Image (cartoon, rainbow over all chains, first blue to last red; front, side):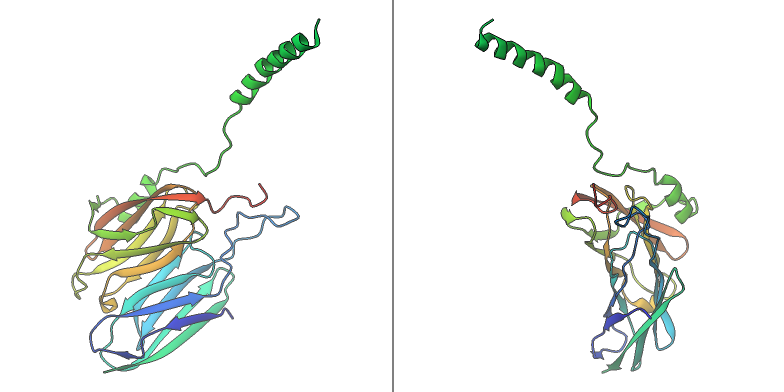
Length: 106
Length: 156
């Protein structure tokens, strides 16, 4: 289970884009670093992230080792009805994480 | 020989011997070498020629730490159901893996704007490629000066 945080405005306007901000807690090891014994630290990154609003995909990302540790992403989404923003991701070791936030359309 | 003479002569000899040796050593490699990103761009575009401009890239002119550089990308394009920005790719030519990230957008995104934090292995040009629906492409490059590069061995 990878931890993460999401921030969505609680009240949004119908059909108007609102910002979704995500912070995932992850080391994002590049695979190029070495530990104190000179052993290479293996690659360990979040490589896939998907965001859905009301079950419809609005954003997805394929990340590489060039994304800083604890990946942060901000993007936009739109909705016509109140619902939930859910974000799911998985890392290259098969671990997954999920966060969600509710919003209401005014 | 007087002591003073000896000192000046030996000093001269030492500098003439040592200085050329120091000068011949190559300067320490601080950054990764620049890679040719043309094949990667061709793979992303499928051979199409991207149009320059149309993307606003916000990057600090000087990044003190290459391990985390804030970046904001804004594509000046509508997000209509039949004409929208489908993807945004970030390519860093000096990174060991040049393709930093690919973001896929949908008409329901509403606005083609993404912020994130990237790692940069040195002072370089960062290329942002935006894919519009119908396999059209926009491309913009941004210069960034990185004081301390990411991806270098910390023990050095």
